[in-house]
Length: 124
Image (cartoon, rainbow, N blue to C red):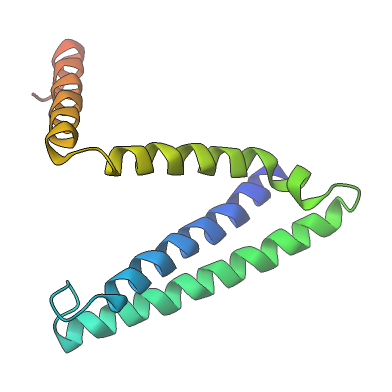
């Protein structure tokens, strides 16, 4: 059941991300990324796809929850909600850093990946 659960949760979470990204892009003024009718239609399609993925994930989660009626929703979703909260706090913390610090962190991580590739004998 765990693999079914994770698949359902991934549907819901990816759909939620698509909804947030498309809503943010569609909500910006005309100076944003959605400046042409083609891009508007693309973002509208992404929004609809995100809503459908969320809906499908909710249905699958509800069906899986019926298999374990003795658990609360918190017990049912606990580990995944903790993981998402941790990931969101890390991303949020990264995004509120000053631009120079973010650039330095990104450069350092790229250097680290390049060094590990060199050690393993991969492409530089």
